[in-house]
Image (cartoon, rainbow over all chains, first blue to last red; front, side):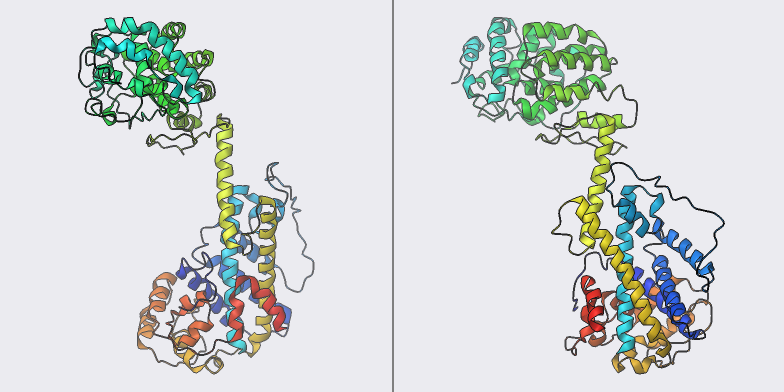
Length: 153
Length: 468
C-alpha cells in the first residue's frame, strides 16, 4: 500500500470512514440533483451542513456527545431561514460558564466553544470528545479534498 | 562462620556484623542488636530453638496460639541486603523451630521475630533446604522477618502483613499477639515498645481501627522507622474512618505496595479502581481522586498529542491546549473552504458525467457507486448515474438488499465486494477513500497527481493556498 502519511489512528475503523464518505457522497448527490440554486453561498452552506451531518452520522461517532450536539446544531441552522441575517430568538440563552473550574486551563472555555456540545462536559470528557471530533474532522477534510481533486481533474 | 549449635547462638548474635548493614537500617540494626543480646539468654531457654524442622514451611508454626495463619503471602522477599552473614548460621536453628506453638506470645517471641527479620534473604547452602523462603505462608512472619531487614523495601510488605493481620483476621486469639509481634517486627523492637504494643494489641481483630491507630502511634514513637513507616501506617488510620468508596482504593493503597517500593505483592481483585498512593503524596480520598482525574486528563492529552500534528515537540499542557485549539479551528476553516470550493465545482458536477471525469480505471471502481440501483439515496430516488455494470457481484449484492437500507449490512459487504481497482486510483485517493472503495494497489502505478500530496493533514491548508 502506498500510504503517503500513515496518520496515527487514521484508519483503525474503516467502516466508519466509509460510512462517513458514503453519507457525504449521498448528500452531495442530493444537492447536485436538486435544482441548482444560483446562490453560491446557499450551496456552500448546504454542502457544509452535509459535511457536518455525514460526520455526525459516522458509526464511530454516533455514541458521542459531540455528534448529538452537532446534529442538534444542524437542525437549528436548517430551521433558520437562509435569507434572514438576524434570527429572532425568543429565549435569551445566558451562557454562564457553569462548568469552568479553577483548575482548568484558561483556554478550556475556547475549546468548549469549538467542540459541539462542549459546554456541558467536564474537562476530562471534553478532551476525549475533542480527540474524537478531531479525528472525524480530519477524515471529513480529507474526504472533501479527495473529492475536489477527483472532480476538478 | 557456622554456628550450628544452639548454644553458640548468643555468640553468633554478638558476632553479627552489623556494620555491613545498610545505612538506613543501621539504627534498626543497632536496636536489634540490643534486643538480641538482651534476650539471648531468654532465647536459649526456649526449647523450640533446639527443634530443627521447617519453621516456615508450616504456616501454623508461628503459633497455634496465633490460630490459623494460613493466609499465603505471595512471596517472602528476604533480600534484606547488606552483609548479614553473621545471621545466617542462626537461621537454621531459629527457623527450623517447629514447636512454636509451645512458644507463648510474649516479648521473647517478638524478639525472636525481630531477630529473624535481620536475616539475610540469600539462599545459603544448607539453609535453603531447611528454610524454604518461597514456602513461607504466614504474612505475619513475613512482616516480622521483614521488619528488621531493609526497611525501605520491605516495610510495605510488612504493612501488608500487618494490614492483613489487622483487617483480615477474625480469630481473636490469633491477631493480637501476632499483630503485636508483627508490629514489633516492623518497628524497632525495644523492650518498652514491645510491652507497650502488646497492651493495645489485646483488642480483637475487629477493632482494627483501634489497633491500626495504636500501631500508627506506636510506630511513630519508634525512632528508626520514621520515614517510611509513619507514612505507610498513617495511611491506614486515615482511610479507615472514611466511609467512602475511596476506602477501597485507600485500602488497596495500604495493602498494596507504594509506588516506589519493590515488592511483588499481587493486587487483590476488587471492584474499585485501584489507586496507589505514591510515596510522598497525600493519601486522603480527595487527593486520590484528584490524582486519578489528573492521570485521566494526562492520558487524554497524550492521545490528543498523537492526533494533532506538531504537538510532539511541545511540552506542557497550556501550550498543547493552544495547539489543539488552533488545529480544531483550522480544520473547521478547511471544511468551510472546501465546501465553498465544492459548491463551485458542484454545478459542473453531473454524476452522469462522472465517468468522464474520472479516469477510465477509476470508473471500474466507481461503477458500483454509480449504479443507479444501488440504494445510495435512502430517500428512495435513484441516482442519475450511468449504469456501467461491469461488476456483477456488487450489483447482485445491491439489488438483493431491501430498499430501507440497513447501512451496515449492505454497505460493508458491498464495499468488500468491490473488485480490484487500479493502483492509480488507490494512490490517488487517500486512505479513507481507499477503504471506501477497497482498492487494490498494483505495483506499477502511474504517477500520482500532485494534489494527492495534500492529504497530509498539516499541509492541507497550505496546499489549498498554493492552489489558489
